[in-house]
Length: 258
Ligand SMILES: [Fe+2]
Image (tube, rainbow, N blue to C red; front, side, top):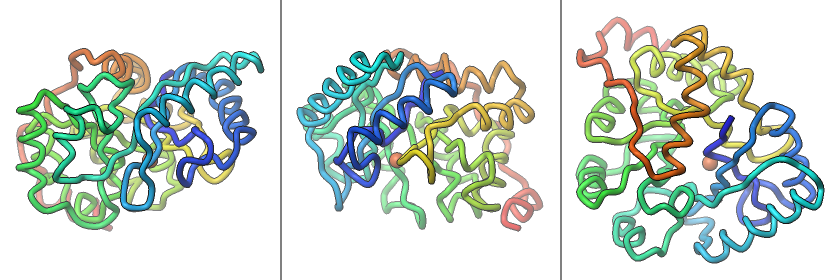
């Protein structure tokens, strides 16, 4: 499996706080069946890591993994907040894309609300050949209340990544219900751990894979942690199901709120 969202790099953000923790996270991931991790340190108001620094830390961690015989490959990435200057930053190589491919970026939604002019922002990205993968939409309060908001973004060409622990319930009832609703409406394309540590949010995908399999079928669930993230890493086109064309009905919205 591939985990496309993971804060495994040490001492860059609120993820792993030492190389020893990174190594322990890597061992947990490998024992869960993960073979590739995209390291995605936060790029936001609190943390800012330039691409050279991320590449340097990725090289150092891969070296440590080889020395310790841990069969895991770590690739560069970033978990980026919406910023009006982001398109230029991607084009100029000032911010790290998924596997440095300049085609896909991991774009973090806030927990509350939708950034102003989000639709214009997505349109500008797509016009410049950049596909955003919206991270953990199921943890956003506005989308929990109305998943049609996310449907609109996906119709504009964005992809979405849900969090493994949302599906398994550790983020609480609302994120779980929303994640399940997104799967049922083909509004989720990738499952990732967003791991930050060995205990509170470990790099484990297998339990969420089983939950997703019960909703979308085992084959499609497996694609969400293998083929689809692999295509994203390679900067290739991603064959994902069209979102359901109809709007989500009122009573379903009510149910997803409770
Ligand atoms: Fe993250």
